[in-house]
Length: 114
Picture 1 (cartoon, rainbow, N blue to C red):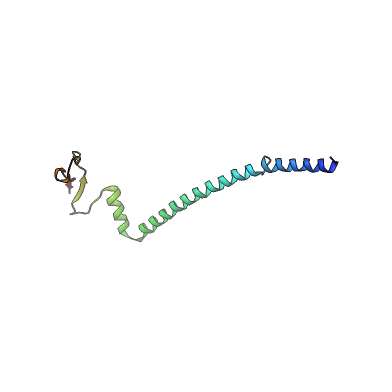
Picture 2: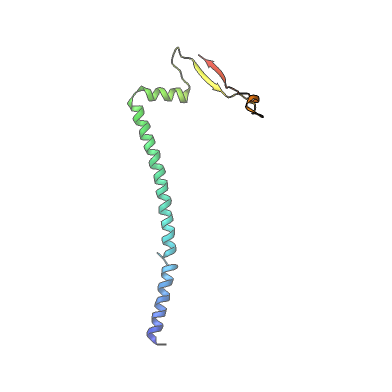
């Protein structure tokens, strides 16, 4: 085997080592590729959240309807003269047994407050 052949084999071995194990090799490339994909997924979630917040800001700046809706849903407020009805699930629900004629329908209780 000649010196040139030996030199080429050593060079090929060094290049293969650099490609697979060395700095900026395939292993590093795969790790960075995964990091980029993870960051892009996080960015998409944050962009969606930002879009929702901007839409909510626009609603709140747009008029009293959004403010009234938040007051009703989050604070439980009602207008003067309104009656608040809350549907409470029946705790004594029966399971249907047998045929449809034997089943008993349970309806939620209704509570009212002024």
